[in-house]
Image 1 (tube, rainbow, N blue to C red):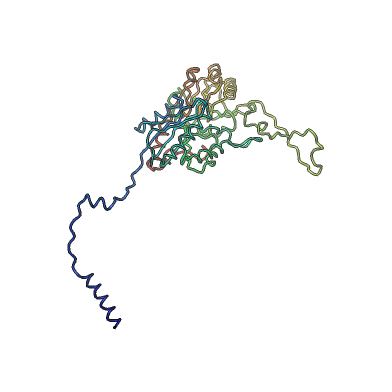
Image 2: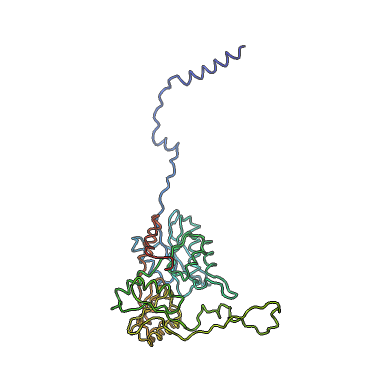
Length: 397
C-alpha cells in the first residue's frame, strides 16, 4: 500500500468537505436561543445611599438637610443601644454595589458615636457595598494627635480602626491639625467652613469694616491671618495667656528639667541647663480700641481661654466681641459662662448638634454647612473633581 496515496486521499476528502456547499440552517426561535446561550452580565452603575449613623434624634438634622439638597431620601437603618449598652445596627435596605455615605456627628457620648460609625461601616462592607464614604464633620479625638508624656496618639488609633472597618473615603471639616490626614491610608477631603463664617461676618455684623480679627494665642495666628486677608481687615494677637493643654508642663518637658538629686546624673554627662520659661504679662499685639473684635478658632469647648481673651480685649477698648469657631462642642457649663461674659455672640457651624446649648444661651448662633457637604457627596458619587471646593485655599489655611 502506498501511504502517500492514502494521505493525499484523506487531505482531498477534507478539502472537498470544506468547499462543498452546506444546506441552510433553520432559524432557531428566540425562546430556545435565549435558553441555550445565557446573556452576558451587564455592569450597572450603583446608586447613592445616605445613612445617618447617630441614634441621637438631634444629630440626624444634618443628614436630613444634606439628603434634601441632593434630592434623595435617607436610607432605612436602625441604630440603637441594647440594655447592656451594646450598639446594634440593622440596615433595612440593599446596599449591594452602591455608594454608601454615612453621616456621623459627634454627640456628648463620644465613644458611643465612634462605635456606631464603626459598626455601620462594617455592616455595609459585609453587605457588599461598592464604596463606603464616611462624612464626619468633626473628627473626634483630634486634639490627641500628638504624643504627650506617656500617652498615645489616639487620632492615629481611630484612623486605623476606621480603615480596618472598611471605610474607603473620608469627608471631614477643619481638622484640628491637618497632619491628621497622614494617619489614614484612604483619601481624606478636609473641607473648610471659613466661607460660611466669613459670609456671616459680612452679612450679620453691622459695620464689620471697623472690626479686627483676633487670635487668642500665637498658635491660632495663621487662621486669624487667613480671615484678615480675606476680609481686608487688621489683625491682633493676644500673647501671654495662662498655660493651657498645649503647654510644656502637660507635655512632660519641664524647662529646666527637675532634678532632685544631682548625684543621680553621671559625672561625665554635662548637660547644660536651659533657662526657665516665664509667661510674660498678657499683651495684645495690635490696636483694638474702639473697634469690633472677632476671635477666630477651630474648636470652642472649654471657654475659659475665650473668656479671658474677651476680658482682655474689653480692657483694651473693644466695644463688641464676637467668637467664630467651626466646631461648637460647648461642653459642661460653657453656655452659662458665655451668657454671663463680655462676649456678644458665639458663631459656630452645625458640624456638632448644640440645640440644647442654644436654649441655655441665646448668644450662640449657628451657620449651616450642609451645602458644601452635599456638594462634596455629589462630586464624589459622580466622579467629579473636588478642586472647586478648595478654590483660593492655600496650604497654610
